[in-house]
Length: 452
Image (tube, rainbow, N blue to C red; front, side, top):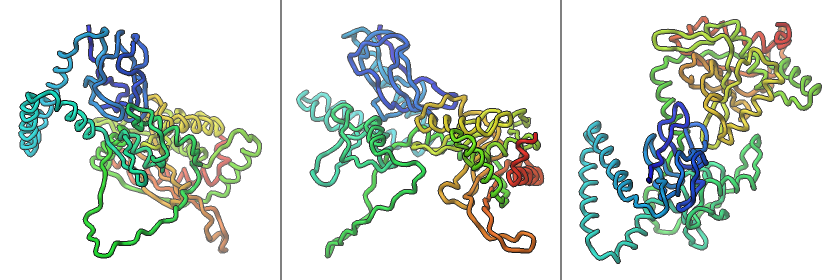
C-alpha cells in the first residue's frame, strides 16, 4: 500500500526543511532505513531515511524547495500502484492551510478569493481539449523553476534557488557550471563541486575586481533596477527568527574594555614553536580565558529560564563560525577542564564540520556563553547579539599595534577591544564589569592559566 513520506523533524528547533538533494529518483526501489534524501534543517544538512520499503512513485517537493514539518514530500508504494487518492489529499491540504492563514490575517482574505477564482478558471480550462495540456505544463514548469539567462550566447540555464544563492555568495560564475540535475538544472552539488575546484583561501581578503564602466546610451530612459528574489535557507530563516526573539525581549547592555595582548601573543607563539601540530590561535586562547573567568564569576555563566535563573557548573563555550548559509555556534563543552591544545584541536574540528553542515544538534545547542571574533576581518570593535537563553556574549575585535602610555612614556603595544553584551535580567552592570575585569587580567597575564 502506498504511503506518504512526510517532512521529518531532524533537529529540536526545526520548523520546516528544505530538500537539498534526492538520493533516489522516481521509479527507484527503496528499502526501509535507506537514505532517501538530504534535508537542509535550520543548522545542518541531514539524511532522511525511508520508513517503508517499495518504489519511489512520486516526488512532491523538488530539490531546493521547502516544506513544513509533517507535509508530504514524496510517495512510496508498489510499482504502478494507483496513488491518485494520495495526490488529491495533498492538493486539498494547501487550500485549507491558506484559509487558516487568511483567518489570522484579514488582509489575506482578498488574496485567497483571487486564488480561488484562478483555481475555478483552471478547472474550466481543464475541460478544453487535452492537446493544450502539454503547453500549460511547460508554462507551469517555467513558473516554478528559477532561471538565469547569462549574457553572451543567450542560453537559458535552470538553477535551483539554493544553488543560485550559494553561487552568489561564493562568487561562482554560473556560465561555467554544468548542471547535473533534472533537465540539466544546476543544483547544490554542482555549486559545491565548482567551489572545490576554485579552492579559495578562507582567510584571504576578498580581491577587488576591476569594474567595466558601461556607457549610457544617448536618450535612454532608465527605470527602477531589475531584481531577483531567492528563497532563504532554513539556517538564515532560523537566524532571522532568533534575532527577533533576542533583540526585542532581551534587555541588552554593553561593556567595552581595551586589552594589551603582547604577552598572550608571545605565549601562543611559544606554544606553537614547542608543538607545531597544535596550531593554537589567539581565539583559542580567548576561549580558554573566558572559561577561566566564568569559573570565577558563576553569575555570568547562567541563563534566563522565565521563573528561574539557571547556573552552570562548567563553561560550555559557543564559538561563532561563519558559513555559506549563515552563522552557527559549535560548542566547546567544559572548556574550563580542557587545555589550550585540546581546545585548539576541538575548535578546528568543529568549525570544519560546521562549514560542511555536518554538526549534530547537541554540538551547536546548549552553550552557556558565546564568543564572536571578527578581528580577522579587520574589525576593531562591534557589539554581538545574545543567543538566548545565554546571559552574555563576548565580541572580539582586531589586535593592532597602538601607542600607549606606560610608566609615563609612550610605547607601542598590541591592543584589542572586547565588548560584552549582557542580558540585564541575569547580569547586572557591576557583575558584567567584574567579569570583564577578570578576563582582562588573565589574558594580560596568561601564565595564570597554568597556575590553577
